[in-house]
Length: 353
Image 1 (spheres, rainbow, N blue to C red):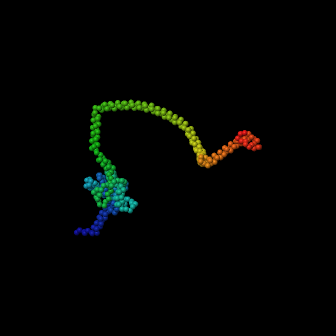
Image 2: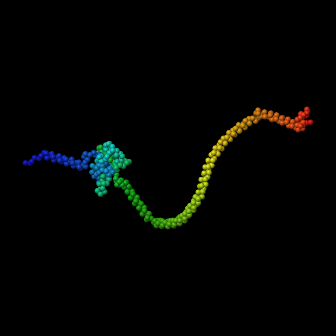
Image 3: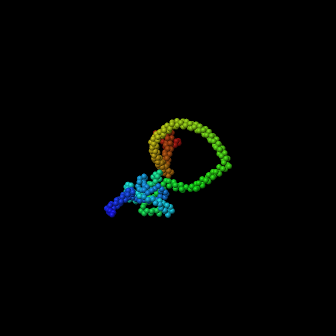
């Protein structure tokens, strides 16, 4: 008869198995079970070959998260396939200076130009990682039906890698047109080379080349002669300038002396000018007084003035007196004894006997 299994042993086995499962989850989950994480999604248009789940997400070389899921979805609006890559970011890897939630801060960082880009980890293995960095002024992606790919998950815009940009530029080149134009150009060149006029053209070009060489030789000879003349002219010009400089130096001294003399004259002229100004003022005052005197004299000598009338009477009387004195003088000269005896009665003064 089989020995019954102990319930205690079964319970201990179950508890041990649960502990091992829990420990495995903790270890295999890289310790993310009890840490804060922020989930985000990124949409890549090109190939993500080399990107695997668990690939690091770095910000300027510092690991801040990892890839947790890679899918492929079809977008009807664009009629193309896109690859959403889900990542989880670890806020504890970033020291914050503000207390705002990291989810809201991530949205602000995206508005400031935070973008995601695939980056080669190793050229040997070809493994890729996701690099986060700021590109100020980078446009935000156009809204699409994938905006609600995961409800409540923030989308981080992506930018193509340099190789993808080069590939896109090459794809935009119209290679068919370039090849067709090249073929047409080659056909035109072949037709030109097959033309019978080509030998004549070559001969003409050779003749032109020989003529050009002859002209170049003549020009070189002329330039040599001209160079010698220019050198001689420059030498004469230097001599002339030296002579002119020797002549200008005394002239400069004379100019300086003239300037000093002019300054001295200015200093002497200033008092004279002041004296002339004062004398002119006095002369003007004297002229005004003279004008007043002349005006008064003019008023006295006018034809209808009383002064002129009295002067006329006085002149008449003076004339009569002068005639009387002249007659008396004549009489005394003829009769000097009249001074003693007086004039005889009836004897005239005018000299009549």
